[in-house]
Every structure is written in C-alpha cells, then in structure tokens.
Length: 355
Ligand code: P6P
Image (tube, rainbow, N blue to C red; front, side, top):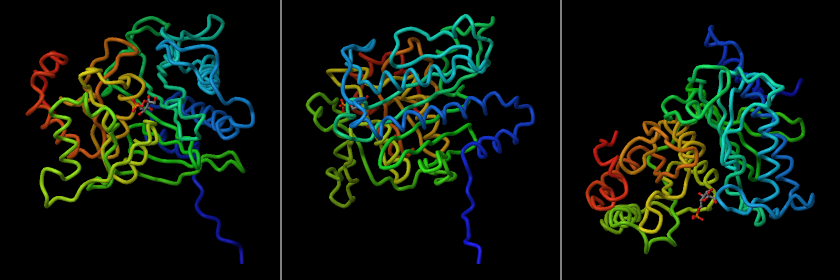
C-alpha cells in the first residue's frame, strides 16, 4: 500500500499558479516573491540558531531611529537587499534600517518595474528573550518616469500595493502573502527547505477573540481610546463578554495571532506619542493590505490606512487593525470622545470619513 502523500503545495508552485491567472504577467513579480521566500529561509536559519551562532545580541551601531541594531537586524537587512539588488526586477528599495532610499548599484540594471519596501526584522528587541519576531514586505509598481526608482515610487498609498507579505519566526517559520487574490500561509519545513501551503485562503474569524494593546501606556491614552479598551473588556456593559487580552510586543506575532483567531491590535496615538509608534510604509500599509484581503480592516483611528498618502518614508501612524467591526468601533469612540486630540494632532484627517 503506497503511503498516502498529502497534496504538497510549495510556495513556488502557489505563486506560479497565481501568476497563470494573469496572462499579461511577465513573471517578474513571481520571481520577486521567490526571492523573498529565499531570503526568509536564510533569515529563518539564522534566527533559529541565534543563541549559539553568536548572532545574538546587539551590535555597537544604531539604526536611523537611534535604535540599537541587533546583529540579526543587520543580517536580515543585508540578505533582503542583496537578494534583490541584481535581479533587474526592482528599481529601488527602502528599509526600516536605512534613512534614505536603497538604490540599485550602478553595475546592475535598475530598470525593474517593482518597488520593494521592507522591515527586515520587526520586534528585534525580542531576539534576546526568544520571542517571535518577523519580517514585513510591501511591493508597489514603479510609477515614476525614467529608469531609476525615486521617492515617488516608494511614497504610494496602500491601495496601490501589488503584494504584501510577512514572515514570522516563531515555533515554526511561516510566510503569509497576498497578491490581491486572498491571503495564503506557508510553513517552512526545514528538513527539505520548502515553504509548504498550510493555511490556504485565510479569512479573519468573527467574532474577534483577542485585543492587543500595551496597557502600560494607559495613563497617556486619549479619552476615546480609554473608553474603547473598557468596551473591549466588557466593563461598560455587564452583559457583554470581554475579549481576552494578548500582547506579545512583537507586531508580526500579535497580528498573526489575531489574523488566525480573530481580534484587534491597536497601537494608538496618545498624549506622549500623538502619531503612535508604528511606521506607515513598511508596517501599517502591508499588514493593512493583508488584513483587507482576509476580510479585515485597518485604520489610523479616523479612516482606512490604505487610503493614506505617505509623505515620508519613516512616518509613524496610529494603527487599529483586525476584525472590521472592532476597528470601526474604535473609529466611533475616537470620533465621539477625541475631537480635541483629532483636531490638534490629526487636523488633516478630521475631514476624512471612516470607511
Ligand atoms: P511597545 C517592536 O519594537 C515594535 O516595533 C512592534 O513590533 C511592536 O508591536 C511594538 O514595537 C511594541 O512597542 O511600545 O509596546 O513596546
């Protein structure tokens, strides 16, 4: 009796099948996604052996935000750039670890049609305590004239994204991606070095089960956020069951759990950091794209993250992301109780209407 071999779908085959649905596709995006998967395998190998390979720990350098770089940060950033700087698929890149654009080296073709923006290792401060960390990718089409990519190509709104992906390095390594045809999760089988389809067509379950926020900042919260969290905890209505609190302090890990189980992650603006902490172009936008493709929604507290036009590569944005009903409820609380905060810190958004 031949043992039944499960229908194995590698990420490469899955990406190719998605390409075949677009006769006009040249295969460049497929190649770019292949390269992202390979970079994820290389980074995964290092994260799982960080403790013994002396890759653990901080370097003596800080990144553009003054954050001490962990050695794995530097490694992940370098792997992603070098995986894509010579393929001719990408015209420019941008990374959380670099202040300025990452141009394609002169001796390589910079006439690629795609733009790759990435956070090479989000949550890297958790490396030394063995908490799950992640990589986040955003892919735009080139829109500027001329061969070389420019800032215009990077500063595009999230609703123009071509694809987005994240990798979570946890008890297993998973790559979750979308090219606008649903959200699909692959688990790395390190014994064969393949990402195998484990979570086809991910849809965020409803009702949401979890809420994720750093409760330690409650003293700085706006009235609307304070009331919203009490609502999530069922404290404003004895009859309603609370959501369970879960906060890992690693965006990709918190987002991934809520995507698979249902819930909301919020990193709001507060009286100490009115613009919040998370970055629009390489954190909020790609995860908002994935959330929307899975039936969820992401907001800055006023309206759709995907509708925001970035003005700076590293600009921060408040983030509420997860089940649409939970995010829209947050928008209601801010609209109802945080008019002063919105008028002071988000005047450009107070005219926006929540989607
Ligand atoms: P806080 C990690 O440093 C990170 O950028 C995200 O991964 C995470 O969601 C957030 O910051 C945690 O920030 O202020 O709660 O420690």
